[in-house]
Image (tube, rainbow, N blue to C red; front, side, top):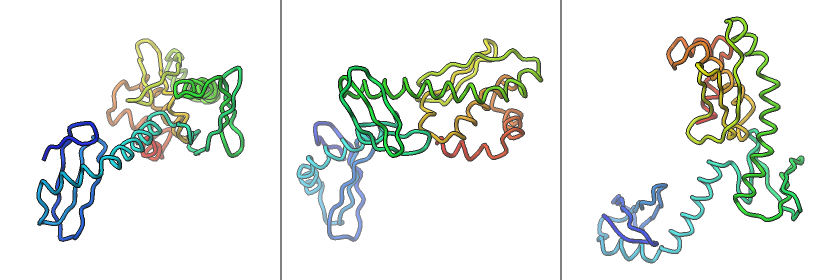
Length: 227
């Protein structure tokens, strides 16, 4: 069933059950799922959806916020830092910066906009990630690069949404996603090792994961956290 509701054309998935009332769910792709009694007609469903348009719009707004939090790890209510969820607070300031206190993250901003919040957050995150990578890379420089006569890679940070890292062995370059700041430290450790391992094995074969397992036997737990 197709219908126009809450400002857009939508597909309606209908499930008939032995229940008395109709129930509506908004799916992530904007389609609608209806559970209803068998006697209900398509006209009844259309009227029910029309009555729920305000609720549909409110629900989609909440879903968008959840999706943004998943993508960016931050919104106006909460930020996720190294696997811990912090409430956020905003203060007016002449210069944009942020501080992580014991129980909250405080943003000092010239103007509170989503773009400014994210830029301030990821600028700070980049500095922290660079320091963390500098502390950790020495082990892999020695065990993977020097022992195998491989030049030490250049490591840069990049905001990536479709992957956690990348490696170009021919150029000796590794990129690490800034989004790792939202996950426990073990995830950064795994991704860093994963990309170093590509300097030895440039694919995702069994040999590649054997290299990973030889250094990090519990690497699958980090993969689970990153899904």
